[in-house]
Every structure is written in C-alpha cells, then in structure tokens.
Length: 432
Image (tube, rainbow, N blue to C red; front, side, top):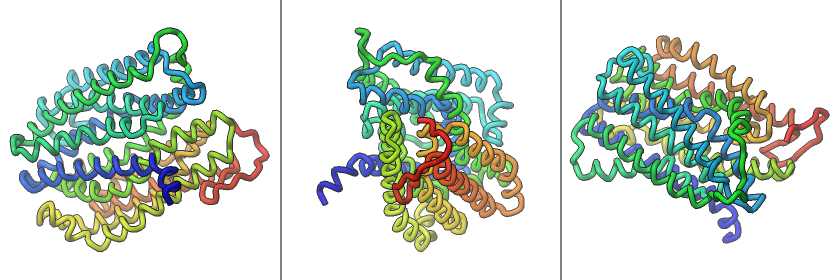
C-alpha cells in the first residue's frame, strides 16, 4: 500500500494542489456572490477568464513544447542553458506585451469584442495586467514541470494567486470588484516574478546545459498552438457567449455553476501536469509500452477520483449553490448537466494528452480544429435555443467528443490502448 502511494505521490500531490486552487477560486466566487451579487460575479469572471484565455493565445503551444523538449535534461542529467531559458521567457513576455498594447489602444471596441459587455477603461487596464501575469505564470509552470518540479510548478500556475486573493478577502479590505481585480493583478505579477527567479536554479551558463534553438521550439509549439487554444477556449467562450446572448447577470449564475463542476476538471488538468512530462520522457526513449501504462494509470486515477465527486455534486446541487446565495439556486439544472459532462471529459482526458505527446500533432490538430469550429458556430445558437442549460449540454458534449476521437486516433496510429495499457502492432510508421 505504501509502495503504491509512493508511486502515485506526484499525481496525488498535483490533484491536491488543483483541488486547493479550485477551493480558493470558489471562495473568491462565493465572497463576491454573497457580498456583491451575480452581476459582480459575472464581471469578475469575464475579466479573469478573458485574461486566462489570452494567456493561452500568447503562450500558444510553447508551454507544451517546453515540457516536451526541456524534459530531455532529465534523461541527459544536465540543466537548461540559461540563454534558452531567457529566450523562452522573454519571447512569451514580448508576445503578451504586444497583445496588451492592442487591448489598451483598442479600448472599448476590443474589450467589448472579448467580453461581450460594456466595461470601463480601468477594467481593460486590469485585464491587460492580469493577462501578462497569467502568461508569465503559465510558461514558468511549464518550465518548472519539465524539471520535475511538479508541486512548485503547479502552485505557481494555479494555487498561489487565488490563495493570496482569498486571504486578503478574509480581512474585509477589498470592497468592490475593481479592488479585488487590482489585487489579483498584483498577486499575479509577484508570483510570476518569483517563479522566474526560482527557475534560475535549473539553468547553467557555462555551456554544459541543454541548448535548444528557439526556432526548434517553435516548430513543436506552432502545431500545438491551436490545440492549446481549443483545449482552453470552452471556459472563456461559453462565459462570454452567455454574457453576450443572455446578459452579465446570467453569466454570473453560469460562472458559479461552472466553477463548482470544475472540481471534476482539476482531476484531468492535475494529471496532465505530471503525466505529460512522464509520457514525454517515455516518448524520447521510444518506449511505447511505458506510454501505454502511463495512459492507463492516468485513466484509472481519473475514474477513481471522478465517481464520488460526481455523485455528491449531482445529489446536493441545490444545497451547494444556496451557500453562495438564494438567487444562485436557479443554476441547479446547469450544475447537474455540467457535472455529468465534466465526468465524461475527465474519464476520456488522458486520450488527448497521449496523442499530443506522441508526435501526432497533425492528427491532434485536425481533431481540435474540428471541435473548435463546432464550438464557435453552435455555442451561441445553443444559448439562444436552450438558455443556460443548452450551452452547458453543448459545451460538455463537444469537449467529451474531442477526447473520444483522440482515443480512436491513439489506438489506430500508435497501437496504444490507454484503457488496457496494451500495445498492438500497427502497419503504418509511428513517429516518436
């Protein structure tokens, strides 16, 4: 039993960190909902969710490419060359700053396009700052995870900022959405800067470290760029769709239900952070069997954690939402729908991860672009025809269908069955 726990310590730690981050994020939502109402919750959600999505656009597939390529230092028993480290971080920041300039110069038109609602210029400024900080923490998390610093890397990206905001909210000094967003921006900048300094310990400047031309990283990152967007667009696009079609108040209701159901999604995301690096190392060694076993472990852990959470969420949905406020109970059907589709997504999540890390970028790209096209076209229609429930059903099924397609692709192209952990020969050449 102890041996099993040791074997799965890092995945369990990743899940604990993601779980803590969701609890901290939910506390922020709970606080705003109880003290300021659904409208304020909608505004906070639109700004922070848009900032997070923009950070995905800025980093692109560079975070996944960094995990995949920089993890070679573990096999080579060396460190990252400092020049490569500075280039990866520097280019990420330059891209983020360029997008921020577009945000600030575009003013009301750009902010309305991104959030589908009228916000003040000060909100646009806060959006830009939070976006830059999220970009920095995202790329630093990838670099740290590539060096097996899983716990710290996870915490940098998802835990430290919401915990800091939650602690300050407990003091009662933040009394408006703008003040809460201002502190969120400050906490993000401090966290990102600290991560950059901490990451220096994994670099050397004496010429013995792993030096990867930035052009080579981009070759890996560009095909994954659209994949990264497709994997993260649902959170942002569903929220702004609700805001644009149904209103900011309804967006506040939707955000609360989504955040509660996201307890399930942390299982997949938490396992991604650990298993992506492990699968990358197995891929570098050409060990298909190891990849299959890792995929099986990720799938089993996903199912084991998802089942009890789903049951609790489905049965006690009214009581959970009533904790935030009586007006949020209207989101009970939405929460139950989200819980079911999130469970399906979690159960099939390792399929997409395995496909992405096995050199099948083109197939992964085709699957994600197809799901992205459906999402962009039909999400607004589902909101108009079915309201909050319609959006929830459509978003969830789209996400789950993408992972099911990935399972079929992994099985056909590589012979890997991540459910059984077996590998069968394939007639076509496998790219590793």
